[in-house]
Image 1 (cartoon, helix red, strand yellow):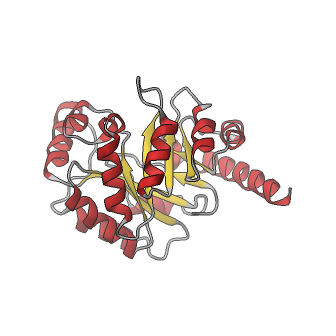
Image 2 (cartoon, rainbow, N blue to C red):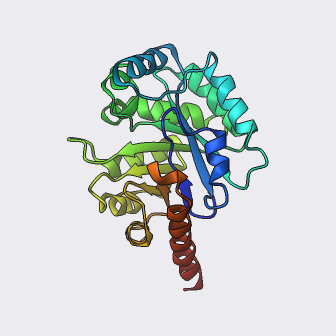
Length: 249
């Protein structure tokens, strides 16, 4: 899916092409975004900016923005990806078509926990409605793009291994797991699916990265410290050593 096995996790309103390029020497993949694609999620994003002082990407044409940002990474030594939020299928399909053209991964955001985004029908609300999540994955996958789904652990009533099986059946290639404080869930997800498993949350050093690899993660992602080259260098080294050892064995 990508090498080295270190990804940069999306940071709302901050993770753009310049951000990805600055860390390209260390990472194999960068998840740009997230970006709201349709009217409902864009209205939610505007509310979040106004009421919560959050950063959000709110270009006039979000799909054109995805296209331009991916084009800006055409010569970068990493695989680009885009984390997207949508309550409807048309804008998602158009964004996925753009990602396919750039050989980029499109990531369905089933992770955002902001009340406004969940009320719009995106984010973690999708984890409680697997039919809608599977429909989004299928729509994106039918374009030929590689599809990732970003999910969150520790939601009452949500069985992440079951989610992993459902999205794999719908065509997902990647599951990006924010483990919260439940690192072992990565192992349960890895056992449940053949999807490429990216583990996220608290990845700061060799120990945390190696723990996720021991649970069966295929890669790890770094969020807030993605602008810290020392952390990225340390995690990249841990990933290279782990998978180098795995290949040797």
